[in-house]
Image (cartoon, rainbow, N blue to C red; front, top):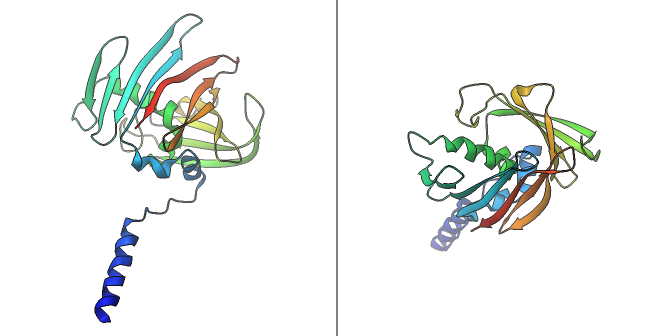
Length: 219
């Protein structure tokens, strides 16, 4: 009987160890969960083309494939094509573009990955472009050395995220250096890609598409 109870206890403890840790019940983490953050460990790679409308004619596109399991990034842009390791001592200049584009593609997950920021919440705030009633989540990254843990390349920047009742991003405003003024874009055309959701279109205040994702593939 004692051997049976010992075996049962061992089995329970083994199952407990395999359970995912509980995420903090804060608004940033609730936003991350709304886009499928709890399923991110199922993903091996994320690939997409990041497009930006530079002016009325010119579109700049960059192809990315982030191989999560081996920490490598494939890049193809107007200048060159190569693959690099995120664990290398020296990163290419294109890594700055990778980080920038990843925030446009995966900001909800950055809220869970990043640690170097503070946040404030304001209820019942109209979103700047469409005037939708929302919860305003302000993220301010700590000042410090660029590329310090959780800070990326531009410490001190701020984002105002306008969140709906389902913890999805409606719009966001980027404010460089936590300045008083910023630029706002929408988060639209949310698609389900494997176990996660990604917003594919970002429209400006003029109603035109500014940044968008194409060729999205999640494995």
